[in-house]
Image (cartoon, rainbow, N blue to C red; front, side):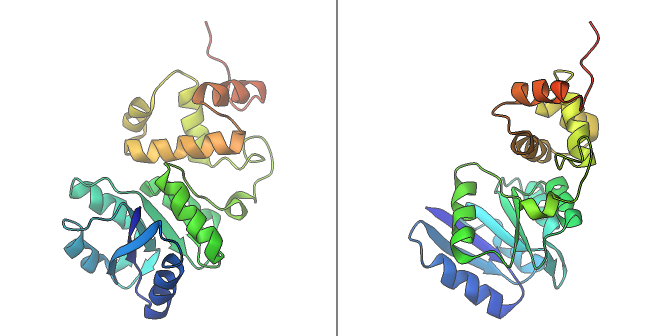
Length: 207
């Protein structure tokens, strides 16, 4: 059972999300909050296994939530939601440590599928948000930060060491790595690095 906490400040959208999730008995909305402040009041007591947060809230932005969770010592995946699918918001979601980014235009069945995929440890990022690049790593949809992470993976650094090197959380690095694997069509970090060498996205280390 995926237990969801919804952070959304528009009542109509909130009611719509609750109605959609009520269609699948594998998903239960256990808490709702209309602001960052209201979320803070729930964070210690919530039984949620997933948080879905709108990007634009009345007292902040949804990308603040992973950091607030970390402050409370909580580790709950966060799906960021927005009315538009843009490269900028995609980068913000990944850098914040969100496990996914979903547009509000997503169909009900796809939204349910996204929530269940995250329950299985997956990540959800819309392809249309990363389809505006052109050459090299850009052609594959890699962001500048993903290219940086890929270069560090090629030096045999693990997620923990990369997080220290880039001064971000391990969760953020793991999100970058998941995104890299998807974009390179790789099944493992090793395969991703070998593919990067083959495509000359990074240079093999000197021996």
